[in-house]
Length: 150
Image (cartoon, rainbow, N blue to C red):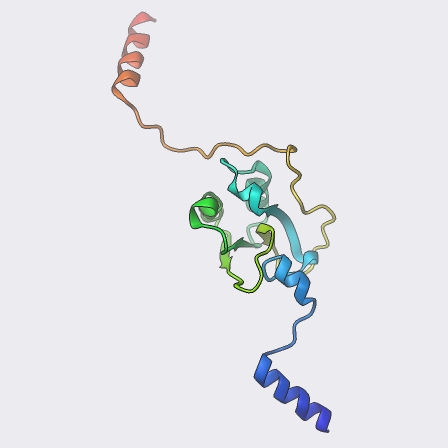
């Protein structure tokens, strides 16, 4: 009986015990067995966006995107925009006690046991994020002259 009371008091003071706390710290609060795709912080910081992540967001719209809050917003904003485009929920996870080398995790809330979750550098170079092209005077005139020369 006293063991149950001690457990109850410990849970009241420290919160509910978590399984695999080191794994949860590494993978931004989730477990390895739930993950679809992962990028390191350095991969997230690269200009452009990894096409594998965009495809994973498109194919796994019921998954949840976790982003490392120890990075600046500008570094992962392109992934937030893509998550919004595919209606994938996201969370920015900040752990002041531990800065994981992981920058982005797309995961379910149940186990899927995917074997290869890391995007290897060089297997899919980041694609430039498409932005609306601003037309300058030169572009407008060059388009006019192209039309006349046809």
